[in-house]
Each structure stands twice: as structure tokens, then as C-alpha cells.
Image (tube, rainbow, N blue to C red; front, side, top):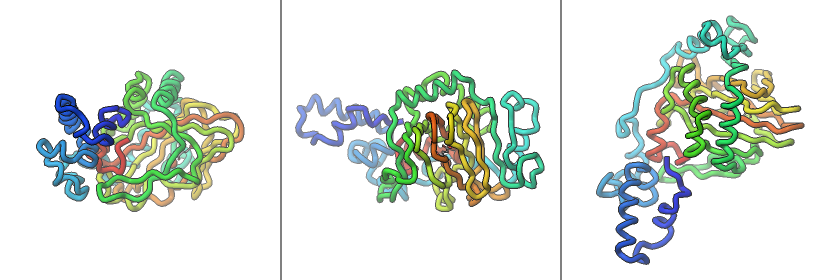
Length: 322
Ligand SMILES: O=C(O)CCC(=O)C(=O)O
Ligand SMILES: [Fe+2]
């Protein structure tokens, strides 16, 4: 994934190339050639000419041409109708998952416990302390910023980032050094193993920090508009609590009237789509992060998509390059 802190990219985009002597220019062109492979979407959108020969970049500048599943040779959907119910039912009945202490918060017809509603479960002992701490430290290595919302898309398929009023937490995207932390790797491997969905369908961990009085108001992790997007809906949220919170900071499912208390190592898991038609968004899954009253809340999202997320992200087809 492209590291936009890499100075090569800043030079390439900010300073006119004619400013440099020719031997320096050739170094830039070499850098550009490597980047046409390692970060094709970013190069097409920002330095189109330098990748014209290798990628036919000027033709691919149009997101409608560049961003189709056929063009990017993407894998098929992770779930068929019925798979969602089966996966959650397995998690709460199969002995192999007992080690994670599953608790049903809600299940269809309350058949597997909890209240009657869409599936929401926790694995109360999902992460080891080492894994929780490594994800948190990884977030610090990556650097926290005030959380943003996604704004409108421009013609190249990039979405603007807006400082959020409804979300006052800070977050860090766990790429590069953070992603290479052994505890981050083992947490993702564990999630792959329990979901059966490969990591190419996941966004990078988004690590979150809430101080007292910070919150994230009601929202949905997907939206009806994502039906047609390249990576499809975020079908599953794997939400990890990395700390206890002295008071407040519960995750509340606003339409269902259900609260979940943070606890270090606990995973809270819910789908954003329907069992009978997992290509469709489930409007019941609105939720919020209640204000932290005392203490600090540390947490992380792993959002899992219906289709491969890595490939369209690499090609600049998901609205951002993070
Ligand atoms: O912090 C929480 O409890 C929930 C956060 C959340 O919903 C999100 O980051 O999308
Ligand atoms: Fe959320």
C-alpha cells in the first residue's frame, strides 16, 4: 500500500521535473516506474503521464473505465444467501469456538439466545492482552488523527475527507509498520480463521481512541449506496475493544435498544447486510459509541467486505488510498 509520507511522491507531485538535472530526473522516472506496479491507482490519478507506457494510464484515469470487477480481475462474493446465519450459528454452537467465550446479544427469533433480532454476538475472550496491546501500539506507530467522514467523490474516484462533528474520537489506519506488528498479524489471522473470509476482503485495522466526553453518534457501517461499489458492502464488522473503560463508552445499537460494554480483548461482531440477500444493506444495524465518562477507550475496527477490498483500493477505486 502506498505510503504517502514517502518523499519520492511529494517531489514528483509538487516540484516541476524540469527544475532537476537529467540524472536526477531519471532517478525519479525509475521511482515512478516501480510505483506504477506497487501503487497503480495513486500513480494514475496523481502522475498519470509517468505510467502511460506501462499501464495505459491516461485511458484508466476515468474511474468508470478503471474501476470494474472485470478490469481488475476480482474474486467472487464471500457470502451466498444463508451463509450469514450459518456462520453465526456455528460460532455459538460449535465447540471449536468455545475458547473465545461466545455470548449471543441477539439472534433471529432468539433461537440461539439473546433478544429476537439480527445477529449480534461477542467473543468475550477473543484477543490476548499481547494482541490488544500490539494493535494499540501499532496505532501509535501509524499516528492518530482526528476522525473524519467521507465527503463527495471527484471525477477520479477520490472522496474528500471532512472533519466530523458527529464523531470526536481520533483514529489511526493500521498500515505498513503497524500492520507488520506480530500481534496485529496474529489478530488478523485469527479473524480470517473464524470467519473463513480472506484478509484481502478486509480494510486495514482502524484503531480508535476516545478520551472523556468523546463519542461517535448514530451511524451505519455501510449504506444503501454501497450496493454497487467495487468491494461491495462491509458485510461484517469485527469490533475489538483494546481496553476496559471506567465509565461510559458503550456501543449502542440504537434501533434495537442494546448496549455492549467495552472490555479489553472482547470482540463485538455484527453484519451490515441481510441473510437472505447479503448483497442488500440491513437498515436495523445503526449504532453509536456512547460518550466516555471516565477513563480512556481504545478499540479497533476490522471491516470485512463482500468482495476483495485490497485490489480496488490499490487501483484507487474505493474512494481513498488508505
Ligand atoms: O466505539 C464504538 O463503540 C463503535 C465505533 C464505531 O461504530 C465505528 O467506528 O464505526
Ligand atoms: Fe460503526
